[in-house]
Length: 77
Image: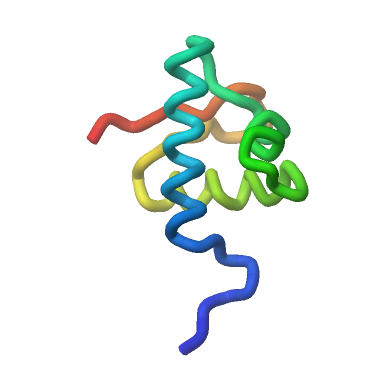
């Protein structure tokens, strides 16, 4: 079974989690999808959203329902 073409790689997911964690530590609030995309040199905020969804599905992040800005939260291990 081959992975989906739009599925992010494991190193990309780990880098995304590290970047979001550092952003929250530095600023005291969560980044927007656009800030994540810019910070990780992704092609679009939609790709950042995909990465965040993978992290949320893995239980590492939580995201408020709807389109509330800055609603990404790190889940304590």
